[in-house]
Length: 380
Image (cartoon, rainbow, N blue to C red; front, side, top):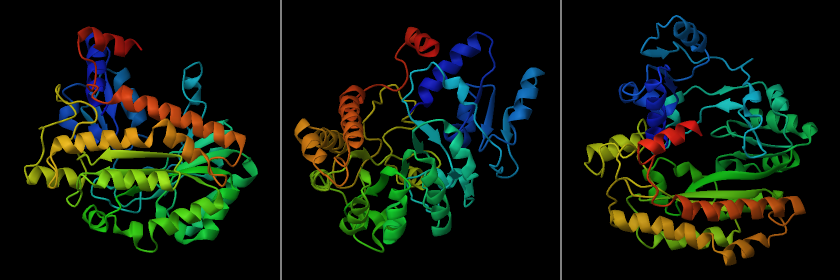
């Protein structure tokens, strides 16, 4: 979603004679496209090759592509957080304890980027964030029982609140979820994706309900006092126009901290993109660069509804879940959202921001709309 704006900013710097290097998921999957806007691309992890990139830049001899020959180890790799000082970022520390995911969902690019390689960082690094509330940005902190227990036990003496992303199958171990809560985890994002088991099989995520139902899994989190941020995707081959309302009612019934209702979106590098492209269902050659594409628009033709119905259904679901009435009713859960004044305040702030962003972002063009906008985006 940010590639068009990134290309615009890169173009402005290059016009000033400043070399541009791009990296991350998008340039890794589409290096040729990225090189139309940059002097060099780093494919995959950058830790092993970044010194070489800097040296070549100093010598004005940048190569087009840099790529590590293997997945670099993460020990001793620490970001310089001083660059954030004085900036208007949220007062929450972002910490990564591992890279990769053990699953291979068809709509997700993580496995395509990291392969089967699951790497972890020393837990000691978490202590250096300097924040009282941290977000563990790992794509899935639940790799195995041993690692999870080691991580949760190490967090207990730090006496900090934390949030994370975790696959819902961790709920089959209630004792582990209780330990998670005892280590001061107050909220977790879980990808529910769909209430239809056929959809789950289609997107290679049937394991979500392999061991227990959603209701049972959610009850494990709630019993431990962990607030849940549930995410859903729509547009699978077994979705209909009735799927949106069912998901909204489910999320409100379980009094989720937050919920998101996303359009299933084919991302470059993910198996879903190749499937939709092969079936001729993509609405744009490259939706992320199309000047007519707007945030919230469907990017392909679903089977059991129109693209317009998919676009409108997701926006309506987001709006319904974020009404003031819904926000108030979901707050009244003494086990989770109303467990303490701090949690209640966090809940209200998160829902206020979520409600505001829904209306601010819908139908917004990607990137800056004109030359002046590009320069302003760059200067910001």
